[in-house]
Image (cartoon, rainbow, N blue to C red):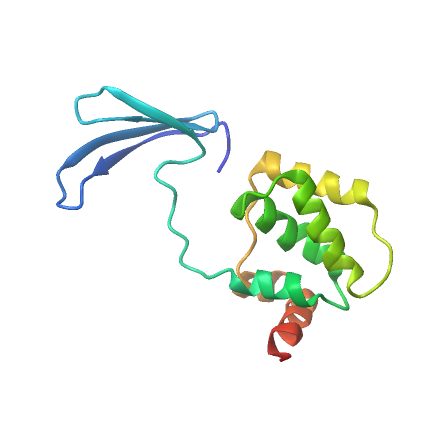
Length: 151
């Protein structure tokens, strides 16, 4: 969602009656009741968009590690998941990603990981679904699939 976007969402109670509105602008949502009285404001879109796909597979890959495509996984999946879905602080996300990378050896620079984390956080980037990964990056998808099928 672009921080420059501006829109209003009408809110409803479960029975369908009007419950007020939410106005999104500049990365903040301001919520008003049905009489127009301000209630609260939150970072991001309110109400949050429901996510229909499970992201459990990302936790499994972070736990088990990858032998190939680790940097792309960090760039496109791991960093976005830890920062924008799990809402981990930067230092915790860096440590988790370093731990993930070093399971298969090699060298990764902490400054690169921090740069990736700051970028995905500032842009609010979300991780892709497995299905979209299959279409966009077949090699990364195959590496993830191999890990998920491993017992």
